[in-house]
Image (cartoon, rainbow, N blue to C red):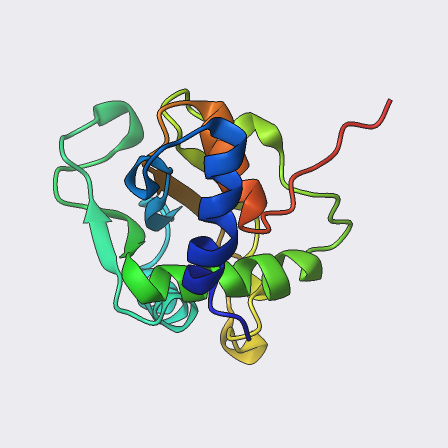
Length: 181
């Protein structure tokens, strides 16, 4: 299995320096972190959070954080401090290992996969996309899955524009969808 950080250093940095005209390696955009989140909601039972924590720990390789509501919202019958989701922030080697597994093993397992959309950029060089089910990860034991849990993946980069971030992620083997006309 290739190390994505070595690919970044040996392939991506020289390619971006040539394409964008960067003079220094530190000017080249890089991945800062990958954030995995899932909003579970408050109507679910408490064991859903334990199940989600177990699945996120298996997927990411580290413990996750249970996010809680910050304020009361009467229309949603939500009280401050109620658990509403789970999240994990990946940095360093775990981030590159997750990126490698995501691009080479997980996304090809998605049914009718034609690439991830190019519309997930936020204008600041970050990219978001979601998966409707976590069972596409080979680490997840299908016998232990009781409820379908979605997953939002955010790539935080040091790129200053969407085009720079697209070039970075494309060179890191992210399978973006091609427009068919």
